[in-house]
Structure formats: C-alpha cells, structure tokens
Length: 115
Length: 185
Length: 151
Image 1 (cartoon, one colour):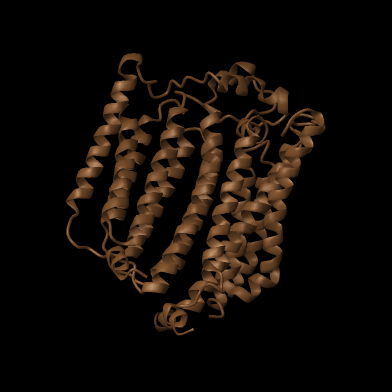
Image 2 (cartoon, rainbow over the protein chains, first blue to last red):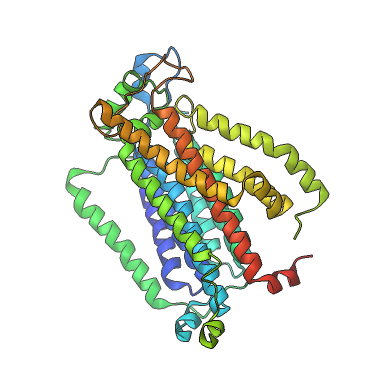
C-alpha cells in the first residue's frame, strides 16, 4: 500500500512544480515527473508477487504462464512513454518560440508583455 | 526474484528525492539532469517489476529527453526565477493530494483495493493463455499492442503524429518573423 | 559549428553502424523478445542524432535528408493503416489474416512483424525530424547568444 502512496506523492510533487514555478522549463519538468508517476503506478498495479516478464520461451511449462505479470498495463504504458516524448518535444518547441519572442523564460513577464 | 519490495522502496525514495532536487534546484542544468536521474531510476524499477519492454523504451526515451532538454533550453537562460514561495499553489497541491487519498478511501474502502503483488488479471488471463496459440508471438506484450488491441496503437500513433506535426509547425521558418518586422511591414 | 573534436567524430563513425544494427534487431525480433517498434525506432533515431551532434547537420542530412525523413514518417503511418485495412479482407479491421508461420521463428505471427517495422520507421524518422528542426531553429534564432558561449 505504501508503494501506491509514494506514487501519489510523486504525482503531487509534479503538480506543485507545474502550478507554482514561474520558469517554463520548470513547468515542463513538472509535467515529465507527473508522467513518470502515472506510468509507474500503472505498472505497479499489474505486478504479481514472484512474477516474471510475459515472454514465452521455447518448451516452457504451461504452468509457468500463471506466474506472468499483467501484460495489459505494460502494453498501454509502452505507447504512452513514446507519446510523452513527442509531447515533450512539442512543449520544448513552444518554449523556444516564447524565448525567441520575449527573450525570457519567466512566465509572469511573458504574460505582462501581452505579445 | 522472489521479494523485490526493498529494492522497489529504495528506487521510489530515490525518485522522490531526485524530484525534489529537480523542482527546487536554482540552476536549470542541474534540474534537467536530476529529472533524467529520476527517469533512469524508473527504468531500473520497471526492470524489477517484470517489464523489460518498458525498461528498454524508458531508457532510450530518457536519453532523448535529456538531449532535447539540454540542447533546446540550457544554453539560453541558465538561472531559474525564484520569487519566494507561492502559497496558493502549495495549498492547491495539498488539497489535490488530500482529494486523491480521500476518493481512494471512499471508493476502495468497502471493496478493498487490490494489494501490491496480487493483480486482478480478469482480462489479461485470456491474453496470457491464448496469446501464443492465437498470434504465434512469444512476447505477450507485442501480441497485445499489435494484435489484440491494435486499435489503441493506431490511435496512439496518430497522437504521436499530431504532436510531431505541431512541433514542426511551431519551428518552421516562414512563421518566424519578430514583432518589429510584422509592425514595420 | 562543424561538429565536435576529431576523437568524438572517429568514435561516433565507428559506433553508429552498430547502433543501427542493434535497433534493427530490436525491431525485427520484437514479437519474440522484449522490444518492438517503439523502442527500436527510438534507438535508430538516436544513431542519427549522434551523427548530427558529432558531425553537424550537413553530414547527418547527407545520410538521411529532411525530405526523405518526411516521406518515411508519413509512409510508416500509412503502412500501419494499410495493414489494418488488409484485415478487412478477412472480416474486420486489424484482423490478423497473414500466414502465421511456425512458432518461435522470425517469420511468424502474421501482421505483427510488418506492423513493428512500420511503427519503427514512423517513430524513428519523426523523432529525427523534430530534433533536427529544434537544432536548426536554435542555431538560426539564437546564433549570437550561442556563439558567445561555445568555444
């Protein structure tokens, strides 16, 4: 149970970074931390005690199938990680555009300038 | 690997400490490197949790995240802006934290949350049992993402396509006129 | 601007081929061992990004030009969609109608192998594209700022 609690702590820290920090790069970092927390939570939910990776080997005992961890959250998280990379590239592109336009990463100054 | 709980707790505490450093560091370079350290610890945790596919993907994606963040941002403006604590944001985060715990207790209080290490696997049992005979793929995760649930993968590929297109459109050359050029033109 | 030192260039020339081969292995054996199109595509993109970091953008674009990367990106997405539509022949979208082959062989499991290859092309070329766009944009817009700090 404490494992889930630590995941929620990680998620909340990412949210705090996203809301409180003025620097845009810090906001991107907060979003990345939130994504890590969600991915880790999904994988932990699918873990089976004493489980092995869901890869079948040649000549494997059919009883060993019962020891596999849950493959469904892994399949969802696998694609979500790559999408996270794409979204991060999009956010970095936005950061560079804003820096080019305003010459600063400071969110409060950017909103003052009304560019 | 029978009991992985100590290793998992060590990695999780490392991740929490690394995130605190990443959030509170003054220098943006150290913040970026700390968040990458968190990502590598996450990759090792996936390996312990029996997910080698995810571990490989997380490792290579983390390398790219580090390169892009450093190349994209660091040389420009290295110091973070610190203007005292934002108490409103702190309070909002704590309220959110309490809401998550409260709703979790409300929903799972009577039925009981699945304990760590005992997943339900109501759907996944079918995938595991019929994965090899139905698709001939030995890697059950590949069988799930590209055969049983290929629709999801199609949707996710289109999301990635849209994200990359958005980034390319933001960075294209013709739209890069500054405000002075626009005003004078 | 013309890349890094001679040591880095030599080592990266030596290593890039191995990285591409490893990425291709990860993609092709995605249905038998851990891996698959997503991670293999990112590894192949990493090889080209290493070329770009070590040699500058001209050498990297001579290996894989911007236009070719655009075409590969779209072709991968279309190929994945076409693989889905082929399933309609057998009944419904994404039905695995190809021959299954023999278990635990490379050429088995029907459409999973071509779908892995299509996803690898899509992911790899699109990440290379976005990285090169970031690098070019940064060099064009912040030239004065960067040249002050770089040796």
